[in-house]
Amino acid sequence: EPDIFLEAARRLGVPPESCLAFEDSLPGVRSARKAGMACVAVPSWTGDGAAVDPGFREAELVFSGGAATLDPERVLQGFFRER
Image (cartoon, rainbow, N blue to C red; front, side, top):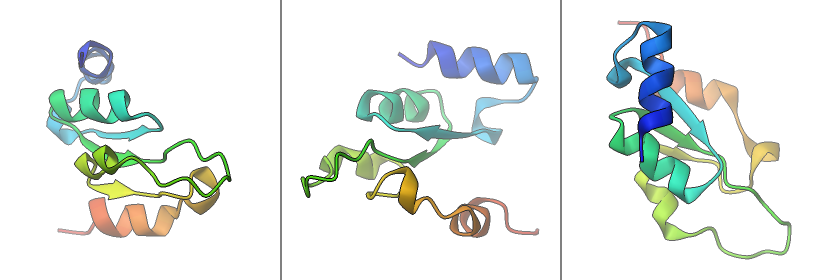
């Protein structure tokens, strides 16, 4: 359920659609999207070469190699372009 994401947006005083969630779990990605938030998926990576669950594609951006591959510049370019 999206409750935790909606509560975070409420406490920040911003609408959920103005938020960007970072999630490492598939249920978290789904909850963030259900809350109306854009999502960056950073799946927990075990290093065993296992494929990332295709459900992570629900996020707008996926770093399938886990936190070690998170690229802040790519996130900034994708979500925070000057308008």
